[in-house]
Length: 186
Image 1 (cartoon, rainbow, N blue to C red):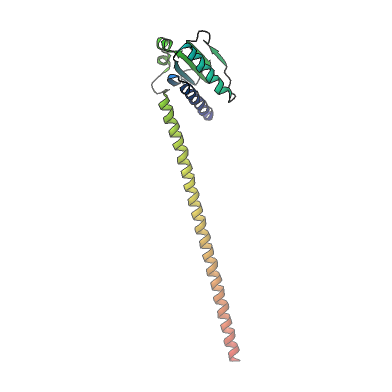
Image 2 (image 1 turned 180 degrees about the horizontal axis):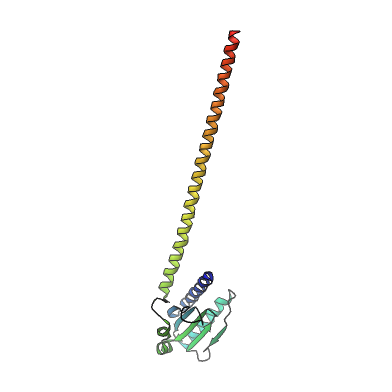
């Protein structure tokens, strides 16, 4: 379930990127998962004209189809002032400025902390990247500690073996000296 939520969020972020790179304006991502069963996210964007609404719609469809993500339904294409694209857990609203201002649907769906601008999305991505980096550094540090411990153990074992070997040599030498003394007495 948590993986699904992350997957939907990542897809919503990607959609915002597509809209931004195609000159969509005032992009807003709204988490509506606690407010409706219709979707988890709404993406709102303002287009500069009717042809621009259609161009944004086409670009989103084209980019998502490359990832085998198909649109479930769309509405408003004929008029072109407010196009709604339904991707199941994500619904995209592409407006002309006049209709977005008139309907102001973000007012209906926002509760303060459930919205993200492009800047907010970038901050989330930076936090996620930092978290991954921190986890990698922690794993690297733990690996270095384990390696150092293993090296210490190997050195201690080698030292013990050397001491054992030296002791055996000393014993052999002592035995040889004793034998030589015995031979000298005879």
